[in-house]
Image (cartoon, rainbow, N blue to C red; front, top):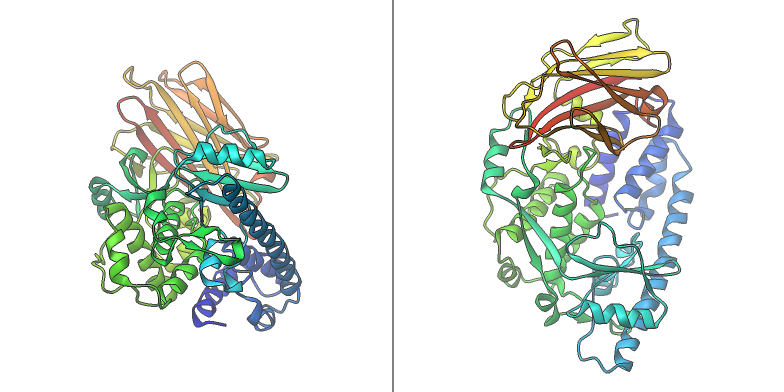
Length: 488
């Protein structure tokens, strides 16, 4: 097994041991499996599974990961066959330009290494004329699916039985505005508020990839990006997943992609000076330097030393739609981090659901406020039988602000609703949670939230981080974050 993978697995064991005590082998195994599958590493760990099983005193890892690899291999073979079918389709129609396969199995197409076969539920194609590609795919039985909420960079999603193709207009590359970076460097306790509109963007187009794309024999001649654009696309995808990983505190990155970047940088065909020529924007530079930072932070390796780099650069990520951003502080924050880690780091108040005190008042309610404008008088938590009651007393809203938006998130679950002074409109609601309001003594509004205790229970954890954010929309938005540790 390569040294970098050993470092990653060592970090996995460290993270696992901080969450469990000896004697919880079944939970340890399940959690370790979750980490390996989350980071799509099942194709890389096979050589050292016996050593890993001995360390956690488990024999269940091998079978589960073998099953996952087998499913990945079957899916890979079907996608290879589909690639050949699409090439033949274009040849029959005498097209001069062919689609380019990006992400997913395209890395294997360049390296021919079995460990680059990893879980990929769809095939991503980019083409100069996406509408023509859609029409041709329909000829071989593909159909469009509901495209509500499709991203700007995507043209269409096509399905035929279990095969899925995402057609891209371009590949997005994101970066930070200067104002966002200045806020990040001044942030207290590693959090601040910023608008999504302050993210800047660039793109990688079909024409960028077309000239040097490589035709893969095993894919029937289907082309993939050359090694330099493969690295740039992986860096852009890694950074996009990180900065946009909303509603949970884990970074959103996939460590298999980081190892893919490392592998491609080591290929004889990779030329750092050629690579430097395609880093033509601040956004592309940000994505590359973010990957470079992770390779150093997690793997302990130096890479791309020939490129300019600011070691003091900050890399914040969004957590909630209202613009709450967080700066990870430790290497393991990029591997696995949950809301409990986040709320503990903020010094949040704790509420023990099994303790004697059935009610607590949250002190210092405005500790995390976007503009220093007080919005919340008080918040209390109360255990009543099998549910947690949360009472948020809002200060009377000025006429210049149109509505209040309440976002609440905890370990994979999210609730969001808006309140205009007379009605509550629910955007997203976890099962069993409910909302209501009353008028307070000073004519301000009191929001009531009820959460079933069973909904708060999460595998592997003895406490849950609960994050509530009150946002008042108008000229603002004005936001207040209220973190709480719930002891189960």
